[in-house]
Length: 164
Ligand SMILES: [Zn+2]
Image 1 (cartoon, rainbow, N blue to C red):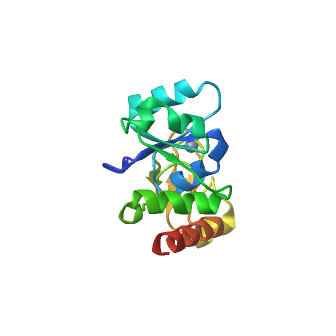
Image 2: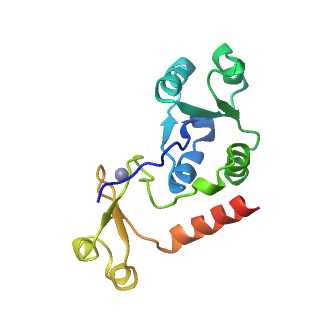
C-alpha cells in the first residue's frame, strides 16, 4: 500500500526559531519542512514555490511585502512554549477535521507505509511485537513506527488541543 498525503491540507515551512513545531505537525500528518536558518529569502522562495505556510517568531519576516500583501501566508507565533504554539496554529487554521496522525515520518517528512506484523518481526523489540499489531515504515530512513506509549501521550495532547 502506498503512503498518502493529505489532500488540500496546508503544508508548512517552520522557521528554526519555532523548530519544535516540526514534529508536532508531522505527528498530525502535515507535510512540514524545517528551515535551518540562513537567508530568510530562501525560506520565502521555498514557501512560494511549494505553497507552504510560513511559521515564524521573526517580526521582520512578517513585514516582507509578499507576506504583508497576503500573497504568501505566514503565521506569527506569539508564544515561546511549543504547546501554546501548536494550539495557536490549530486555532488559526481550524485544523480539527484534518487531524490524521501516524502518516508522516517525524524525522524526514516522508509519508509512512503500512507494514505487516510479520515483516517487522526482527526490526522491533520483542515486547513491542507482542503487544502491537499495527506498524508503519518510513521508505526513506526505514524507521518503524507503532502506537506505543510516547505516541499515545502525544496524540492525547493533540486531541485535547483540538477539542479545547
Ligand atoms: Zn524517515
